[in-house]
Image (cartoon, rainbow, N blue to C red; front, side):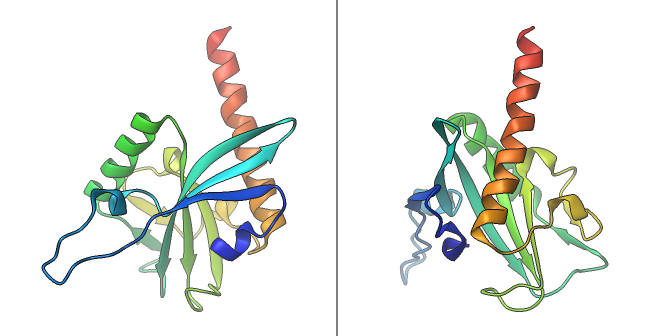
Length: 149
């Protein structure tokens, strides 16, 4: 996913390190989403978090997450007032998955992402990432605007 940030409209603000000591000590910050991204949008910027997940295959046409994982990211999203989006690669290899999906945490129903949810699939390219996120945030901002009317 980091390689998909190679676009002048994207900036990697932070990257979570997954370091565990030999005694099993883990920094609390390593539980945060993997990437904090800033993206140029119009005359301003938006920033959001990407949580990168890879699975070697679909399990009965779906990928299932533990409830505690989703709860942790939902809490993080509320506390930081920034959207969390899953970057899910399935099949192929972690660096070149057969399928790449960007799934906003708010779109995860229950704890399962289904293979047939093709509206989340993107081409693995920087421009596809930018276009998808611009489209997503247009919907988010539109809904927020409608609530204030």
